[in-house]
Image (cartoon, rainbow, N blue to C red; front, top):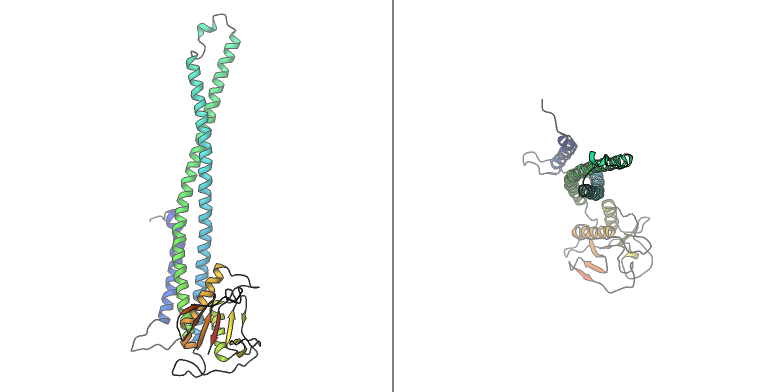
Length: 337
């Protein structure tokens, strides 16, 4: 019976995770994929799609957790590798210095004629001094040899640690890259399911032949129109807007807010400039609004001192209104017909 190698055992959780994700993706494709003409599958309901989305999100969360744990382990392995190299360099420096001193001692001993001979000891010199000198010389040599042997062990041990750390870093790097690819794949599928959920909703009201919509009156406790309320709900569910959504306001400024036909999706608080991640979320909201503008009755979008109007279909720069919020750097604004 073949015995699995340590490398195989390390890779086994990754393969298991891959198999689990593959099974989940197959299930998603079976639900969302095209049906055969003979047995047309019923159109999935919002409830079914949301249930599938929840399952996929759970799997994606695990992938993301494994991904970041792998990154942390990778960083620790790199740190251990650097520490091993530093200790190896320090040990090598001491080893080289002690080796040089030993060579100098050997040269000096050779130059001075080596250890005392029997004739020298019988020549009238103080035997105790000669014996003491010989003992000291042997002691120094023994001590040097012991130190060199110890440093050699340190050097070899650190070299082995360095090689092991490098191998571990390489292995973890491969695993992290694999997890990253599968995380991206899971998130891509989540996006597709969200798109399917979005398409199940259409703006309420009457659409004219020229693509515009008959205006609606605001209502409800939030004083916004049904069309605006749908857009607000879809953005909130899809993107999670943690810093709040501002819609109706009574100030008559010539815009759609007093009419209940506009909402601001805040990326940061207190007029502060948003972070790179928050800016990216704003870009995603704006891109989503453009993509769904015809179906949801979106009239225009303002973001980062630019405006996109459905009648023009392109971004154009706006004049400076004097601040982060006034120039819409901290939030995308969406107005509906």
